[in-house]
Image 1: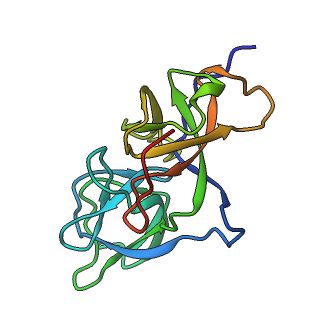
Image 2: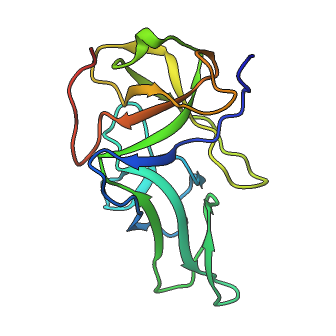
Length: 188
């Protein structure tokens, strides 16, 4: 049976050492001009705030959501999406919640075809815009970049789940290989 092509970004699965998987708080710049969706790979920017990840920078982790005070109503809001250029109440800060532990593994869909021989290899991320109706990420593991160099992700295995088979659009368990708090080695 063919896998369904339905990317939903990075979903935390487990901790490699059995620890607790939980997000940590980081600042996000008022009016940051790029949308962030729950499940997006993010990085730490030069000013110490969270921003969208890239294939050329070490990742901070995975965006979970954001809390801020609405500029027009004064209400405290929590959202799974940071909408580009959101303006918050003056003299307050927005807080991004990020899964930042380098030992967390994630489920992510592969863009391309996965084979069991790819376990241990590395790949980059296919950065695509999120889904605006429900606020979910649509990022994927870019399997066209598979190799043994030190890329963003390391493939651990195929996720053992119903209707998930080796082949195109497979759901994979990965760890962030180029992590701000613990960069790993090249692939095998």
